[in-house]
Picture (cartoon, rainbow, N blue to C red):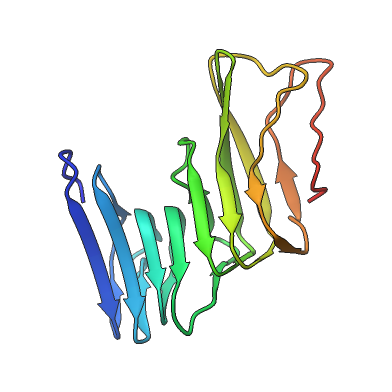
Length: 193
């Protein structure tokens, strides 16, 4: 959906495989990918050398899979059927609302992270904002957490960002990469993940 007016776009994969050589990118409207009846969305079909990226508002999975993507930028993941867990595998990246954009990622169900999770934090003037990953079920952490800072103001002592809202957590991120800080400042990770 590249309509700058903001139309609604929906991709339904109800059984079978939809192979896309390239990216699926939402331009400005409301976009949804829905997978059911064993449907598969393959972002690197045979003969394609590069895995595609997906940027959508909603991902609804009742019974299906997304394979071979590079980065999934999404605001809502709803696991509504037999599927109860979404997994980000090694070599894949998930970014709430998109890389370089502060926003939410709400997962209804369980989330297993084994690839890269990219989170954005921002300080513009005195205003702090950050991506927020919320999981209604179990969050099984792993892989790499990359946090990127943007904005026009330097961080100062006492600045605080909440990145994760996880009622049930298993494991920890294997690697955590945080932005560099000015001299005299250090990061405090209250979750110790």
